[in-house]
Length: 352
Image (cartoon, rainbow, N blue to C red; front, side):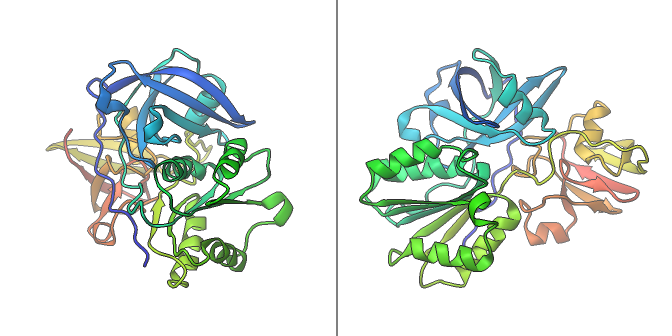
């Protein structure tokens, strides 16, 4: 049976009220990925508590901007460490900053842990399926299951090659330490080519064996859809299937164009009306922020739902709306961090 976790609760991030984390260590994992260890400066115990698979909303000071991103914690909760792991994406403002410029001692405002992607049944066999940096929440879950349970654990991990495989040495060490109940299968596309639907299905079924594991997957959205189909086709081999929405397919840098088309957008915020000219390449949230308007926002990647609003007139290109239910989409709800105008439109936003 395929089960997607319930939508994450809205996180209206208040950087003054939640937490300020201090960067206490940075470790390079691959040529384009680093792990960052964070420590709450308030030393409030609950700010260190989380479930394996959850994430933090973090606000990074970059130039004159404060950009918010959500990053999964990549350590298990029982170890008492808060570690995020970030992979650089082309033209990525935040990922580029974290992987190249972030320094030990930097203070980062952020939230406590959030998210509904965590172990649902610790007594059920575990199959983690990850691609690229989608390994970050999955390795947290995997290590938690190995340390706190005695169930069979499996991991299927797709990366370009060994050199680009985040946590390769860590996973090899785990496979040696828990050789009696852990199998890690790497699929390197440089050696094996891009995995086909048939290859993926056969690989997952072989790993599942007779244990009928629950499946926890994280990676690019199109790839996760392919994995879900493979799981759904074989209910006799798998238990429930849970997923974490991956980073938006678009990079996190502002777009630019020499021939942009602009549209008249009316923003209604708590009864006040604001009129903006918004480029087709610009999100509603980015345009509002540029105009000095305060909209609810959190991760700015379409994952947390903080910027959910209602398009009551006109059309937008919705972007990544996996967070929204089909009913909400039919009712005109959009995510301001994803939606781009395709003509004149009216957007109703709840006041902060």
